[in-house]
Length: 100
Image 1 (cartoon, rainbow, N blue to C red):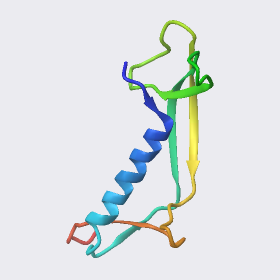
Image 2 (image 1 turned 60 degrees about the vertical axis):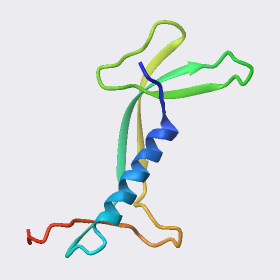
Image 3 (image 1 turned 90 degrees about the vertical axis):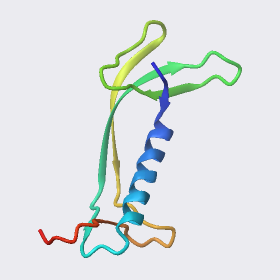
C-alpha cells in the first residue's frame, strides 16, 4: 500500500480547488464554498528511525490496518471556507453556459 500523508492529501484538495477557480474565471455563475468537511481513514504509525515521532497516513479505499505497529482510525477534518492570500472568500466557478 502506498503511504499518502495527511498533509499531502489536504494539499491535493487545495490544488483541486485552485484549479476549479482558475477554470471558471469567466463563468456566468459561481458556487460559494461555505466550508469543507474531509473524512479519512488513517493509519497511525510510530517512526523508529532517528527522526522518530508519530505519522498519520491516509488509507486508500478498501485498505485497512497493516500488520505490525499500526492502527487505523477515522479522522474528520472541518475546514472553514477557503480564502485567498488577501483574506477574501474564494468562490468555485462553473464553465456551464446553461442556466440551472
